[in-house]
Length: 312
Ligand SMILES: [Zn+2]
Image (tube, rainbow, N blue to C red):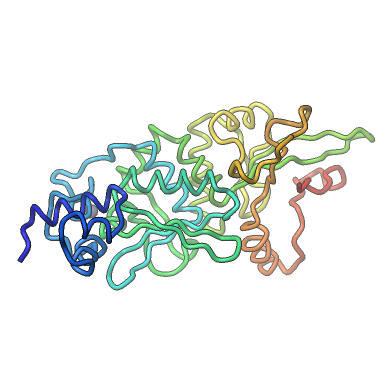
């Protein structure tokens, strides 16, 4: 029987970035033993270790996150593209991201670790990368989890979540746009003259999540409207300028950026503006629901002046 102190040291070394083999060698232990200690989240018998520690909702009395900005951002990501499922009785939080947006992947993993200090991992399939983390406390922190799809069940914030988002609506909106939203440039032709304008949109099948997006936009003072039954749109110039200050584009990683971007290009327009996740996942779903082919939305009352959204 090994001492709790030795187990704690091994787990700390592993959580600090060492491999199982390095940790085993450093402490003169068999690799399978160290693997059991470090990777079996629920097997921990050390309550002082983060993996065995309580979350802020399980504290007595229940508290608030140490980093509420990261929590608000992660909640936005979760409501957009996240889910909680169980793997061998271990809850797992997964956020699906477009693989090309490497900055987003990093920010997502950082937010997970800021909310619960567990290791995070990635699984990539096709153009989609899932950032994930295991902990028995994820269901405590996201009480919206449940069976079935989010749009088939009510999504209601707990009072403590509402308090956090009221104080930090901007990171919440950033998380929503980074998951199920996009920033695009639209073309408009009025009396033969062509105009371009930027707009933000957030698409979701859940009326409750769309309402939360609208509520957060109201909190920051941005004008918005429904451009479709399942799309919240922000297109007014001053509102878009406001969102630019804390959202901006879903940037690509440095290795994917053009080496010599055009000096006269718009600051954000050099990068793809709409994720392939939207094209692959949401657009066909909307098309099936409405029985029509995918096409850009047309604001009511201006059917002939809005041309296709530019895609680069
Ligand atoms: Zn908990």
